[in-house]
Image (cartoon, rainbow, N blue to C red; front, top):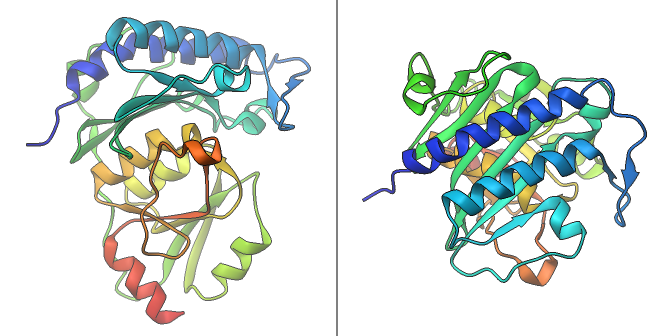
Length: 281
């Protein structure tokens, strides 16, 4: 039996909308960001949005620990076991600082090392993506003025996301990071029949795969588990897979030994893409 996440989604919706509104209050008027120990920027918007989400998670699921980006940067890392949340209150900080709309609020639930629930909200684009169960994910439009919404209302008119099959000509649409390119990525793409390339910021790259508008998202640059958990869950629910860059081993979570850093990974619309691409290479 697949776990139903509707109760969790409904419980988190108000906080996710509030966190999104918080980001929009700062968008376009951020000021000079602080710099964390790893060199990445952090703003007051990050901190305020994270506080909203942590308060909601404590209320909705008080027994499940939470690893959140800014709390982790401050040294607050709880012990986790089989189930825990990963929170990125502002994914796509460079887009946010640059005045681009491709930034998101992200909450993911990990169960036994695998992302099972995810919610992504792009307030500037008025889009929300979430898993209703482990085999169903939806994309919905959320008008900017909406401050609260029921899950039932969100589902009305929402798109059920499904990844697309391998193109008949095997020419792939690749989605890649707008801000984090790499020589490794370009070298890997040399062996791929690329029909089109879409550069986009934040966890929205996962959503492109889940909605069936792209085929592969390779990422060889550094990411953390909170960057990917929500999008990973949504891709799985929509029919995709996420492997390491060996194209076969799965990306898993709760990597305490790496301080929750991810290795290089590839998001695939369908399982068969992995062996088709490997054969072509």
